[in-house]
Image (cartoon, rainbow, N blue to C red):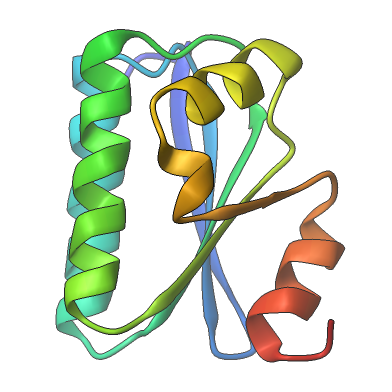
Length: 118
């Protein structure tokens, strides 16, 4: 993967955290979807996508995010986003994603929400 596109993952309690860095297009979107689907297949039901390193999301990237949200909902999981830039927050609102997935300013707030502590 290019140094301009990165995915870092870790477990935070029973939540799988995916930190996305770079321009979220078809290449990065496909990789994010792949790691999230693999965790869902392993039985993980709480997913947090941290967009702190992502400034732009194109239309194909948003379609991958929508696919991830649909898969989490099919598995009766919970999902949250955090650290969205203003433009990406607006994009998620316009595309309707904000109706299905809550966004938080910080990762801690999102983790608290997903664990039921918020």
